[in-house]
Image (cartoon, rainbow, N blue to C red; front, side, top):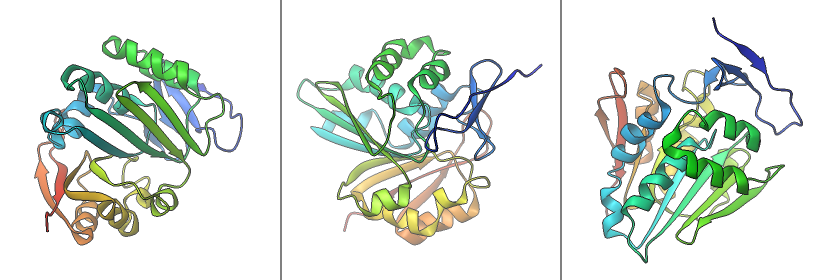
Length: 241
């Protein structure tokens, strides 16, 4: 039987969520789970890391910046940080930048990520540094080679105002059918325009309009096998001119 536990809202910017199956967060705003119910951590490795050619690309880069649409529970950030620590050189740096409309509370992040002992160290470090009322721009030095920035608010507005350029993107908004604004032509164009030449993206999404919006923005888009039996996912690159 599914257990449903409603988390009371503390303010307008708190994530509207419920809990299913004990520690599985579910967005009541978008009617979708925050990560793959099979195994969100493994999905991160398959879709976002491998889809962007990571960790291999880190070995040839002194400074690498990842952009993410949808910080959610921080799962992708923690799993990326875990793998980054295993692969990085002594003088390399990683900047992980995410855009999140409804930042979660630290206790909710802790609860959601506690199911993966593989990222216990990263989870505890993130939760310990997470602000009690996340808003605006959250900046956290995870360690002396890794920085996390979370822009709280509308992703399109935040990205349009940003001068940051990214080497890779994790497009991890809620399902396109539930949150079409996160996959709009305008946002995909801004993602492209804030990607360095030769930079990449990856996403679990494979909807036709998502693929067309990414292509129209200027990305070369490939279909790849999806995670856990899902037929397809998308990845691609910005051309080097």
